[in-house]
Image 1 (cartoon, rainbow over the protein chains, first blue to last red):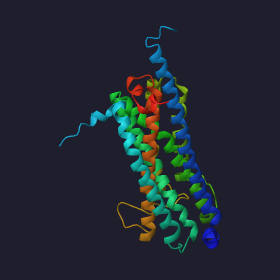
Image 2 (image 1 turned 120 degrees about the vertical axis):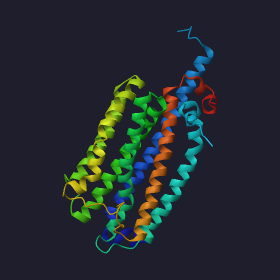
Image 3 (image 1 turned 135 degrees about the vertical axis):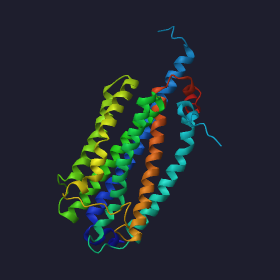
Image 4 (image 1 turned 60 degrees about the horizontal axis):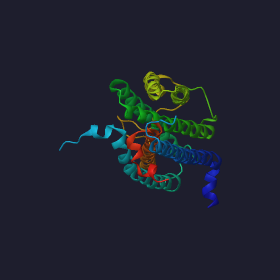
Length: 59
Length: 247
């Protein structure tokens, strides 16, 4: 197993490349999920406002 | 049999379609990535010239291909948006930009960590590398321009024009290794001649490329769904969505 990670001395370069790629993709997916959650929450808020006051008379 | 493609040109009909497609693309990407990593890191033998450092190409080459493909796809949707004033096309262009920037970053990063043991340097102002860096700045420029303009339809047009102007950089990246004789080597894979690499290495690279394609499609579809709600949140179709009605 340790010979696999050593990659004949190239381990540092290989795992730096693969590691940062994995982190970057994970950040994209997590950021997108949290953006979707907040956008949905905002849409719910606006839609419930519209349901209470459909013509905006209270503004 | 004729399919009415325009049926899916409206956000209200495209939103549920995209939602059904995402899991398929995401699972295909995950399975292909596992297979590709297995081939690339375990099955493929050590290269006789580059040692094990060459294994970085299994992410570098697919990411570099994707960085260019995604820009062309983004430019295609931008052109349709500018020409026909269709809002879904503009949203698709908007949804692709961050993933394109990410793929460009990955291509540059992995290239640096391949270049250091192979060429002896992380970075050089070589034609291929410099034009790829310009591509990253083009993606950043499109994203920044979008954030700088409040009216989304005006932002669509401005970003569309910038995106289409930047397309000129794509052939420069692609042909840079032929036009300038600088550090980056020529392509290993070519449409016109047999690939100059062992077939197991080629298989690993192609499997990883398909994984990158499906990943990009899944993420872009997920992002375009979010953008649709963001931009049309007071629309009637948004109010009828299950995920909006159930708090």
